[in-house]
Image (cartoon, one colour):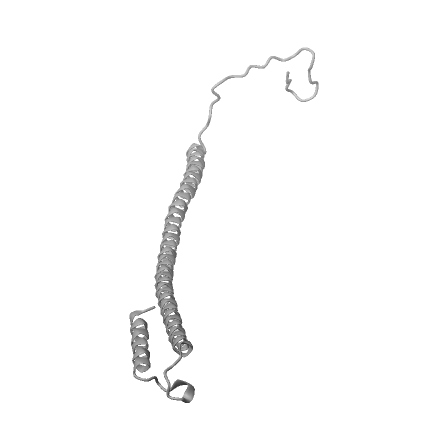
Length: 186
């Protein structure tokens, strides 16, 4: 029992005792003092009221405890939601950062590939040009040789040539020609 309930019971008990000693409260309708059963019933009623007050106070305390627990859970849930929102914002920022980094890497790879392709094309073009230059030089040398040969022929036109080597032939007794005047041997 709480203290206010106890004080009330004592005050009520004192009032009943005063009423008994002063001629009663008029119980039983005859103005005579209250019987002990009536006094007991008064105390029992007061105890019942006090118990009801205690039950009401306990229920009230339980309600306030439940309300405080719910408020605590609400606050905790609000903190969890805020933490989730921060986590989602961080995840989104990380994703955006990752996306930007990926785009930058793709752009860098494209740039590097373009540089490699340009270098490969330049090298390939240089090699092809080198082969063309060699073919052209070979043609030039071939044509120069033909020009030199034609120039030599032009210079030698009308010049009598004497053989550098002599070939002797001896007439063969086996083959002779009776017509004509020359004998050729072989």
